[in-house]
Image (cartoon, rainbow, N blue to C red; front, top):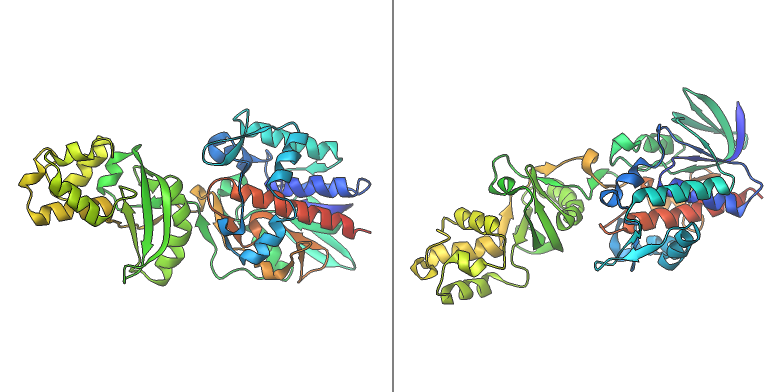
Length: 411
């Protein structure tokens, strides 16, 4: 049995950040990172289409779900976006802003980010030990005992940065929850995939439009018609259903709503800025066909599909339509019900909704209120952000807090 001062379980974004700042805070401490993967940082490498959306130019608690936004704010303020930009700049990673506000490495390569984090950690003296899957963690007489098929390691402090359950092939298979519960923590009642594509019934017209993308407004509505959540952005049609930024963002809200009220509906407005009434008036006044009116507004394949769904000949002059036909088309363009059957699951989710409640950690240090000497950071906590770099910012901020606090507590 060997020993270390701080053991960090998980070498993802939050774990690497915690390791760097633990080592920088207390240079003489022995900081060891354990990870069960053959290759470190797999989830970083696939993020942002392989480009790694490091953060967003503006990050606020309103960009997150899960724990209270007041609690989330406290952690985010400890290591904000400007500090994140400086941190990566010091590691040799310059970031560029895209029109959406997302910040990517100028190389457009996630490998640049991962290599910089690994080099920064090793340069600070961090020891990496992998593949070493931690199967159990016990605490006795002031020391933690971490065990696995590889043997055991004692540590004065432990940081759990195991992630949630999203993209389990990268190592975040939910085992961190088992470790957290063994040390006295609870979990939120629901652990769900978030930022995940949604499934439509086989043979649905949109599944025949794979690859077609359109700017839309998505609304999650109750029986009364009141919108619970509204999201704007690109939606991508796929062979299995729908994806794209707008869909990924609303997926986090659709799942719990559908579980609580099966009658909840997901509505798409294919013409942002338009309403049923405005489209109905425009169609009634247009001298040409539906296809001509929709030209420049929608991709032709999509326009034809929506006309077919409304049982309207796309090439027929709109003046020949009955009032009911025209109104059916207007409704299909602005209030199209999507019969979502489910999600693609954790294997395709970018993040996990749910986890260890923030009420179970000290927000100043992210130290466990259940087990002294244990800190938690990253996705294992009940915090998940919308698409656009927000989940990485949570990883950087929470990793910084946990790493610094664990090192400072050694004194």
